[in-house]
Length: 632
Image 1 (spheres, helix red, strand yellow):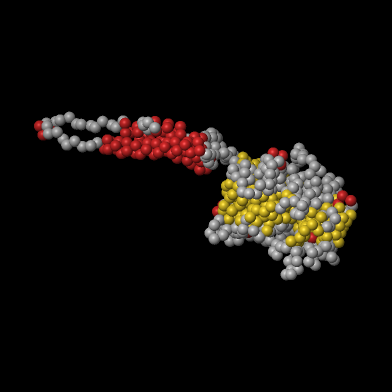
Image 2 (cartoon, rainbow, N blue to C red):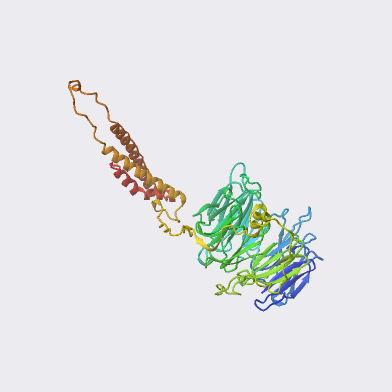
């Protein structure tokens, strides 16, 4: 495996041999330096390496499989230098971008990555996170899409617009788009989808629409939402579901300095559209799809925030990995291991999780980490401290999959570091080795160490164990929060601490039979109906079995006059209860009449899921009416 390091003086490629290196490796290949970290890009399979030439301002393309021989030189369009560029998924095309100059012509070019021939060019005045990259291909390059001012153009994957038809999706006010990697059918078959987001306008909400690339006449799914100043969309690996993260620069609730953000889940077929995480619950730190399975991990909430696993059919939460000061998620290529790290303004605590095993394999503190990533073999993890964020202690460190440090390289000024990509199938997925665990630092390493020199005198009250200083030291010493060593399925109760000798309480099912799979609203509705039904039964029983009125015996002549007849309180109460029961029966009969209308409507056309659910509840309504002593 190879990893690279971009410095001011040059670009270096290193060969990493697991288990065979006791000292930092030497560079296998070196190139002239580039001006910025954006001056280097790899193709998706790692066969092509692109470097911006500081002398010409163009891009030099090298073949990594042939001792990095130069394939071609791509010149600048408007005088250079090229500020950013990238390869298409199969490495057939190279897209370059230069700063827009008035009356300078087109500043974005699409080139043949092997020969350097210009395919076509266009103009892009402003580059933003939502407008870059301007061209997006499917994983097999069957289609290519480009966002224009009032919609999305759909082109053939080879970018031959002259010989093949080019279609367009009209979307005035478009702000972002994202192409699914492949079709949503089994094995990637079926039509591939494209998602586009239209900004809010004149009080109307923003909306995300999903179209088929083969038939873009009408959307297959739509989701409306407000508070969408910026949008980020992520498809799962199968192209069947989409995550939409909307953000605002200012948080209306005032809970977050970073603004408010919401996360929505949308199925490409339109069967499901829901909100996964709301701004009221805290900031969305990171969310990442599993690269091989239909599931994703989410970090959401105030720090220490929980890490949760959600399934990809409805976006429901399925697993909990505890809480901690974490803001970064990194999956390996096989979807087996993933890392939860707290970088940036956090201390760098990093957890290595085995998802199939549902266990924490190890933890380590990777201070001042700026960039990180898994190796192509899925068993090594690289972190780098780079400039300009950190001007000192620039370094590259390589760890194994449980957090043990394997090698370290120091640099004077490091701009970027990472692994060289490899094609799928170059490495095989392997479970963790039995007995492999994080090595603990030895506490007896100082057998011959010099005794610690006596420091300044500190009074007993300042020797730890209390005070603000001790609290701050404890907080800096651990950012794990309520961390866990094993994952917990949602719906399972965790271990409960009981007094000695106390027997654990047996778990009782929730009222109404609501389980973890039922929604919260459904469980509330069932509980409310059960309570109402119980109250109705009690009222009917009280009305039908009123206690007899007590009459004392006569004691004399003065009592021969019959006393005035008074209406018993129980009888009055029974009449009120009877009226309430009658109201309940009328309400239930009205629901039955609505169901009859829905049945007539079903004969004319299809019903939505809510109407079907009402029809299914007809038997339950008839049962309730009969229990109240009436006929339906």
